[in-house]
Image (cartoon, rainbow, N blue to C red; front, side, top):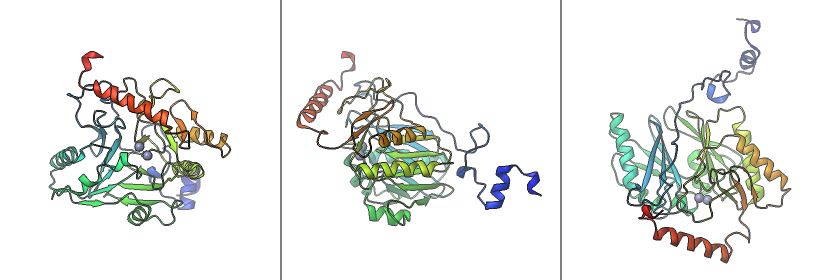
Length: 339
Ligand SMILES: [Zn+2]
Ligand SMILES: [Zn+2]
């Protein structure tokens, strides 16, 4: 075989000894490549106050080995998403939910169903986190106390050292770690800025990038602006040339109307934005951050907004307003006929 008989890119691949693994390069044909496909729901159970009907967790099978769970708005207005990814040897749970989530019964049911479907009796579960905030770690105690022989748990607290050690991240935050779940490698990219211990998870099998609270359709609270900007730029670099099916974050706070979010504390979101964003959102976010020239400010974009969490965030008046909003919605949470 001569180079003459190869296409330019194939020749380059041979010359440079690059891996031919399609998961490390964009696909030449628009045929879906060899990504494991999945589907997202048309809407989530967050539209109406129907708390007699809404389960504690909405379980959505993106595909048979990639499960998305969303906490009910009836327990906490944050209604975060968490993610359960199965490999051949292990499973990974990203986050444990927010206040009053009561995750263990649903988690056990889903994992036992997966075991049944796959003719297995047990699977080790790694519990890790997109970041350390309480609305993603509230369920830690419950998951650690699972005590289910079918689901031996390895718990990674959302701390820099523990995260570095477990995922083999050399220098924090510039190096990338990984975990092999058995035929499924998840890359772990440190992205501090929203919080100290933020990480993104990239699932090579589906091309899904879990972004935590760093990028999602809602208010992107920025705690450390320079770190946040550097993290967004590292995410752009990391995803360059890789197939990115979806960016999936932890919340939806944006409505389906461009530039319009739901106020802080909104439980029911009848016209909410879809969960998924595309890689282009990272470029748009980066451009917005660059435009601020180092002076963070609130800025609404089409699908999300940048919210520096400085003195203007969580002012007494804002806190009062959102508590009232939650109270009103809680009073109506059982009675959807009134709506
Ligand atoms: Zn957060
Ligand atoms: Zn959050």
